[in-house]
Length: 417
Ligand SMILES: *Cc1c(COP(=O)(O)O)cnc(C)c1O
Figure 1 (tube, rainbow, N blue to C red):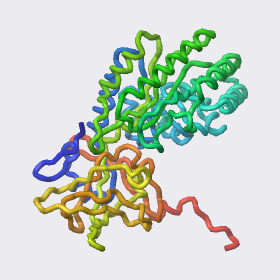
Figure 2: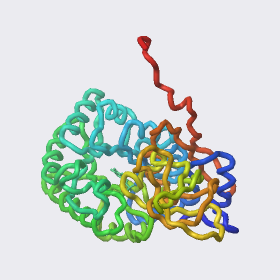
Figure 3: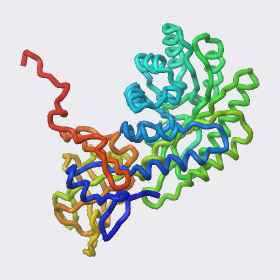
Figure 4: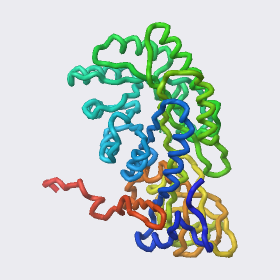
């Protein structure tokens, strides 16, 4: 469900015609629908209403302050993976006691920042990290709230780059290591063991791998309980997929129901870390056609956005639907939709059937709200593009377009040159 729709053959975001925004901000730009973001969050929230829970939105999917504030206003917390994301979360006004800190490579300064901020818990991914958190907490004379991330060794059946729950991935602790680490942590005065967590991958389109992971975690909890260790928080990570093309992932309600059934009676507070499923289809990337050309019988449509703006097609071979912003009854072509960057890997779509387009036409790259702007870069010295949020019949620039000056801010030429 989303609020991008056509009216008189013109694409609207909620009640605002997309060309009107393009006129004002220039192209390319990211465009988010407030109503869609809100709806997705509330639907997800509702799926777990039968049990105490906290929805910790995964900041890396979309880290704009306005987006984070919106989820915070709806009662959400955050899943962060860096000090930078913690800074964003706090700036957006998210209470620190609703923030969980994941990631395999937390640095000392990031751990100290999180301890001083008073976050809900660290999802710890190795024994050495646990020791470092213990030392930092001791120095600050604090008790660090800890959850251990276990790697349940289930295959989520997703792209290898976004699968994280297999033994061969870099994430989490094996069950045997986790048991050892829980025992060790239990004896440390500056660690407070409160949770267990797992996150098996992203863009999952079946519910079974989640349930397999949950069963593994439940078994592990039983083993821990038998040796006198108990936890309050059960964090099942994120990973629920969305429809980019033909996928039919479970609805959040189905996902929630299956999890609650598998969980059975429990006294846990459940933590969920959804990212993509909340923001993915709530955003599009609007781009303008620069040129069209034919070479060796192949059609190319060259647009003003590129892999630096949206890297998913280049990085994962990901599919994004491409729609015309103005529909007119012209014919269709089959073309590669490519950007201006000097790399053959710079494409938004390959061999794609789209309506015939002319220079100046606007195209919407759909489902670009997750891992879109957050993965963008300045490659080819391209300023990063604006993010715009629509609410009803108004639109708001929630991040301005970078300038050429922004590109060199922070650089300096040493005196010897
Ligand atoms: C990336 C990530 C998420 C969010 O994943 P989605 O597929 O976007 O839902 C949640 N938790 C952790 C630990 C992650 O690394």
